[in-house]
Length: 86
Image (cartoon, rainbow, N blue to C red; front, side, top):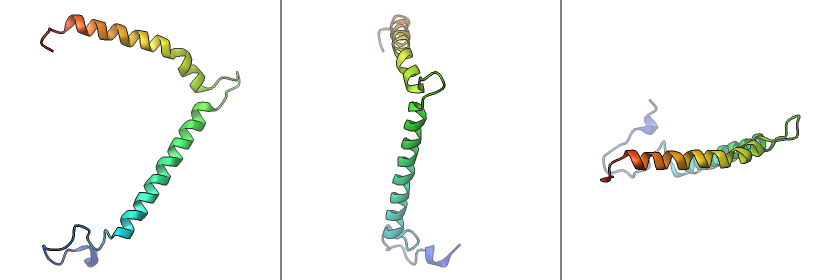
């Protein structure tokens, strides 16, 4: 363990010497860049056209009404099976 990261006494600030404000800001910037890259990759993957000219997003849009109907049926099924106290 690095001696710079050890607290010298109990009355120190919340930010240790090894977690300085600059390190925290750098990690925040890095985290933001990483999340942005992940979102960009996901959007690119979902909108990429395959051989037939359809994307994954097109498939999801086509199946959405079916999933909504299944969710509504499951909700009504749960309402009938659960007691009224819930």
